[in-house]
Length: 147
Image (cartoon, rainbow, N blue to C red; front, top):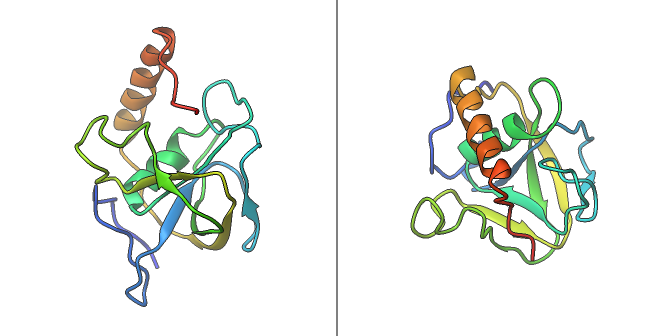
């Protein structure tokens, strides 16, 4: 089912009406695979990630697929957490009060249960502006929270 341009902060709801979690990346993985902590991060210096990240909005998952290291358009997977998860402190209360982006992290794997096909990314100039902003933060020594 083709999807239209992401609408920020709208929970992703599947065809059955159920809210689902998403994960955007550049990695090509099969349905049923686990996305696990301890693998090279999709961002920054690609150090082993202590967390895996998931979101309840298509907009946030789209950013994940667009900003991950690698070429081309990455996939957006529908995922199920296999254990507890918490608000992502890199976004929660950083730009917006609370967690309207529905961004979370977990020390437990995410199971891929599907892939969204036909999602529409952000305009190229918006993606470049975000990459430039992230590069400025990195040059200033600002890193993601990894506790």
